[in-house]
Amino acid sequence: MKARVLLIGHGAMAQTVLAALPAPATVDFLLVRPHKVAAVQTKVPAQIQVVSNLAQCTHKPDFALECAGHSALSDYGAELLAAGIDLGVISVGALADQTLFEQLQAAALQGGAQLHVLAGAVAGIDALAAARAGGLDEVHYSSRKPPASWKNTPAEQMLDLARLNTATVFYEGTAREAAPVPGQCQCRGNHRTGRRGIRKYARN
Image (tube, rainbow, N blue to C red; front, side, top):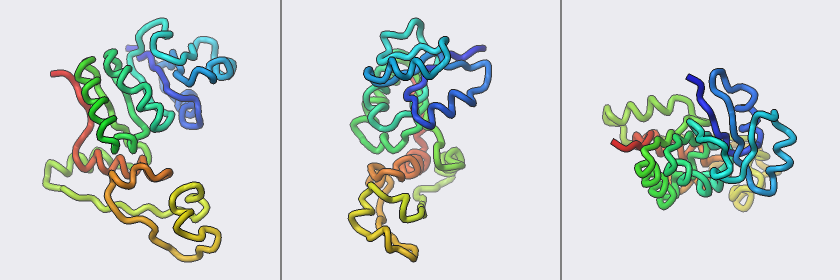
């Protein structure tokens, strides 16, 4: 059966999805900010409708995939779920915001839709979720990156990144606390959701 997909965003990740999405799934809609609609429409095939809100779609998508960051999930996620559209989430770190998490959960229950927490940067997230049933209640995760990768993050305020020549710890804490840190939110958010076994919500 053909799946008609609404893709949120048109950055590097979304463009990769556009190029690699296997048949019979097709991207029918691209959801972007209003000021980007005209420019993005010129960059995609004519059969893809670029929209700035769900009401502009000419038909109901079968599935929505978020590839646009935390703010996009906050702005569009609940509306999609409440409309009965299953939603895959790449920006998992956004779910560390308990208020947003509960809004999405309520919307999914209201619309009878499913919120899928995708693996993103962490492989084996399903194994972590399954291990919880066997008694796993804590996961330790370490992330190492070159100093330059931490520019424009809180690490830059704590360390002299240009002069670092040995491995240096600048953060230790919980996944929820780490989620807002740019560059780490998806990994930490994934570990939080996998550890607690949160995968999807659906109306019974």
